[in-house]
Image (tube, rainbow, N blue to C red):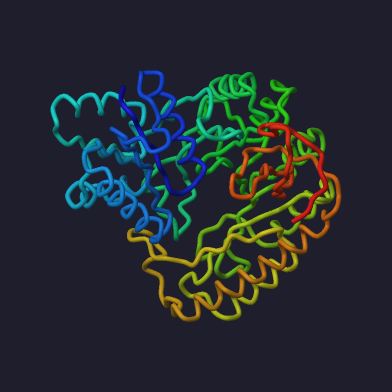
Length: 423
């Protein structure tokens, strides 16, 4: 029996795609490695969202090739799509695909076993107008399940490489989504996480338009037994009246929203080609908190975008304080070759960029501590995901994404228990 190992970097979409490939290989007789077993096949899903993630992707490939030099190495994902020539010629890869053809991985492996010849099949995501149908019925190692509803992006933010390597926005058929979620709920999953590259564009490519809020409502109506539905990320533009109504009507929508900001400076937002303004952003947050006062709202901020002045950064600091995010994910800007931002001058000096990153991280830590203090010593429902051997405790998350480690003699994996929140 062929043993396989799958690893990935990057987003929840990459995680989902790995699980789909795992499911497919298991159905066809392969087995995931256990303990210290040596894999016959290693599949790596790469990331290219930043220069750092691209570097880490290549490092991961080299690591596995060195450690398991006899294994068949399969590489897919955004970095493979972005640099196929380098990947094929400089790295010892046996099978190279990009951001499509994941459903063909089993066939490619069988072909390589027979002919021992390198396979390179990089499609053109820009021309691909259909969502690639890959499905799953369960996750190998998680108690929460990700469900991918969409791929690609049409926004073309000036700093972002993703539209070029993932292609245009393509929505998954709603019936496929309903069926997959139904199977996952039947298999005992209590939390479903909706994910995609640009979920706010869901349904715009359908002949009969369907919004993300429409899809969200139908999922909730069709799955009344679902304990928790979490949204991995949502753009400000997608927070419409219907979405706000859903937040008020369905308590099983997680009390946590991740709403990317990227900058608190109107000048920088315009240079980034972000399609919202700060006034609208602030108003949407206000409306959300009127419905869900205790909701956790997290965000992404890019620091050191070309042309960002001290005043621009101070505006970002001020805005984050005003919104009172529960956490800020901070990303130092890095040039991605081929993007508009890579040609914008002047670049921010690395010294100042690093100083700004550290300052925003400090603010994020303060905001996170302030938010968590509101819930200390209060009894909260936690969904426990796994047992941590080092801490001899079960690890779980609340609806608003508070994390807890809790000692118990009973098996709490995939169970909900009301416990006192402590850090």
